[in-house]
Image (cartoon, rainbow, N blue to C red):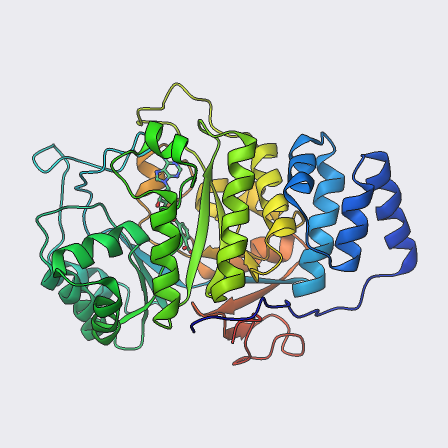
Length: 402
Ligand code: V47
């Protein structure tokens, strides 16, 4: 993938009719967002001051309309989901992040590590389902040798050779390289050879050093996350990206985080999807914090869509948001809802009340109910099944990434 020119996302639909545009402009001016609206309509990049203005506005609906305009310009009504499965191969972790309810110390009750055979078993259990992706992430357990990581990748592939493995957050990759006693540049081809297909977006949290020091000081810094993602993209892998919001971070720190993601994407083009992650406080050291409201969540989706003009997809992760908010998010800038999932642990340990998985038909129904067109994608956004064969033919690429 290497160095890339900043990419223009494809425009799928012509701008909507002049009356709608005039109405949007009028609303935006009333909300004090007139210059932002002009930039959005002209496809001009928003600045950090624009982001601060968006965070400050109480007019969520106008902000949502602006984000929806961009969403529909890129994707029309198409809304992506996949058939996926989560495997968290261990909950043992030495990072002691204050926002995390999933981690356990090695001898603590409930601590577990799956053997490669157990990982393969989890895959085998779903063989009757048309799963195309396994999302595999876990805690940092320093005792696991380098071979273990290669073995779990091979175990997945031997149980289901055609499955796409989206695995290892940036901190896991740093740990794997550390255990391999080799630079990540040398380790990545070996992981790819063993079956790694792309990397998920988790673990970015908030890049600002202040928040890292106060919340997760044993974990990588923001700069290390960005450098690791750069290395991942240079190895030819795509990844996703996230921002964990609604804890101790300031609005300025969120804006800084988004700008760093946009800069990285200008440089590498390797980010497929941005997922704002809502902090769930239950069973964490930050359980006294209230966590974000539904409006906060919709605002993060909208500002993500408006600021990250070079990242093709914005995900409303239904497990975290709940289905009704994920449906609303599809009109606030999101074009993806993640997948059927199967056995989510990280959010459920932190108090999520959503189910741990959902049937494919239900996902399709939720998307249709929200007035959008469901499209099943694979991890790299090729169309697997389409609710509209003309707009999104099976086999076509659903994103602007090459
Ligand atoms: O890495 C941990 C965050 C992430 C909590 O790439 C928490 O497609 C909220 O990254 N409250 C895991 N967040 C989830 C994740 C993800 C989910 C769906 C799709 C993709 C993708 C990625 O959740 C962790 C961490 O950043 N997290 N604890 C908590 N209590």
